[in-house]
Structure formats: structure tokens, C-alpha cells
Length: 94
Image (cartoon, rainbow, N blue to C red):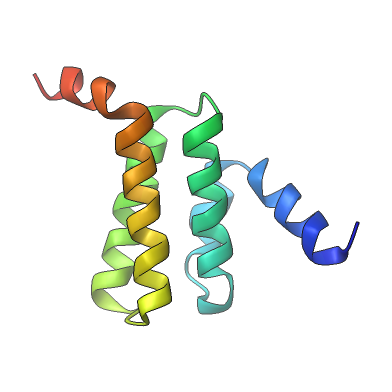
């Protein structure tokens, strides 16, 4: 396995809080969002933590990161959260 593949595999098992902390660095933003997206689609991570992480991504995109690649990564995260947890979000909003 290459170092990049090892880092990517490790980041998908990283706690959501650590991934959110990595969002603050532009150089780690896309990898952190990709790992959050992976967790949203495959794990039983707490919905509240996923939504808070996605909201943090949204805030950073609005305030700091304007590159289209960052926006595409954020959009994919939101789509994945809604696809896999949309029913839970509907129930929680009632």
C-alpha cells in the first residue's frame, strides 16, 4: 500500500471530531470532507455529529474556501448525509 492510500484508509476510521479539526487547513480540507462522506455512507456515526460536521463544512465554504473542488466535495457530503440519513432528519425535525 502506498502512503497516500494508507493515509486515506486511516482518515475514514478517524473520529468525526478529528476530521472536523482537519477542515481548518486548506491542504487537508478535501481529504477530510471525503473521509466524512465515507463515514456518512458506511458507518453508524451519530447523526448529530455528521450534521454538525456538514454545517462546519458549509460555513467554511461560505467564508473561506471558494475553489470549485472544495464546493464539489461539500456538495457530495451533503448529498450523502441526506441520502443515508434523510429519514432520520425528517423525523428529528417534527
